[in-house]
Length: 404
Image 1 (cartoon, rainbow, N blue to C red):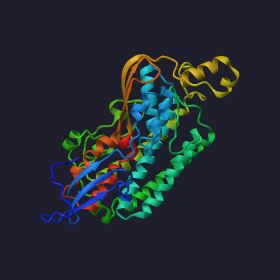
Image 2: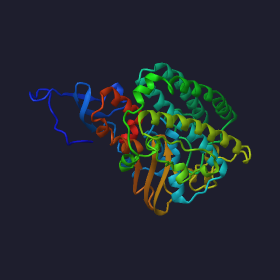
Image 3: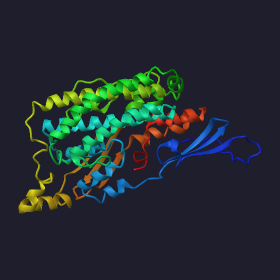
Image 4: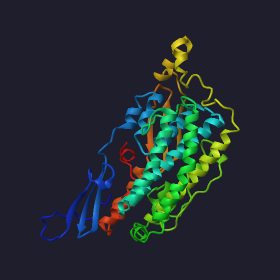
């Protein structure tokens, strides 16, 4: 936010500046947040960002919920790639409990997380196209987000807020239909992504609207603690999957795309290339699954992993475990844990302090959108309003992740 500039009113006789409310319900913001802008014609003189419109106090709620009941809260952070949030939280608890997962579970998680990353990047890049007037590319590629949701639906029964997986693994194994849909996606999506790139990558209008617009230096990006595609677009090679591998990412061969100028065009290119790399990772994971024993979809930790429903209904011990796990009756170690995953918008971290009780003593979500968005108002100074809109799209600010 920037409070250094005087805020003029429209009635100020000394000024011809116009005050514009960009948000909280303006369609161009793609979310519920506000920017009060001072305009000189169509050029932004200054701006003040206001957040908190959908703040839901997740961190405070988490202090009153057993570990299992926190997963649905994480769905509602970045709801464009919910499974990454879910699994990041599960891994945090697994780090607290020192649970080691079978390789097959890691590979299944990688498949779901990379599909989520593709869905997230589809939304961001098609919206950049839409905001520059390219509605065709938006409508064309968006159907593949639907195909990804169909895969999620087959795996867990949900599409957007997935609540997918469990502490220790998944609630059920992937069925043959799920694997068939994944293979179908791997076959069909590359052709569509190539066509999408053919429509935009060398499109003169698109390049004129994005190249050299909202440039950010790597020094400024690091100063504001940017991570993810925004940071990599400035030329900084930082990806949590590589710097601190989780879920057996060290077993995969993939590249981390980086840009040079940190402008909107570079952010678009980085996200596009990340989709190609995600496809590459998913293909490798599907191959690795062939060498793993079938039927393994969770770690052997009965005191923390919910027993199957049929056992709960017919077995007293399973019923007791189910009750104790759901109600948070099993003590977890006293410890302080931080775990981060590479979310769609950057480093998504969970800082958990546990005092040995049934709920977290303190839980903090490191939300990349909240950190990335700090720079929007200062970046917008001197920029045309139409460019600021595309800049916001390229930052992929998700309101749920912004506010929490």
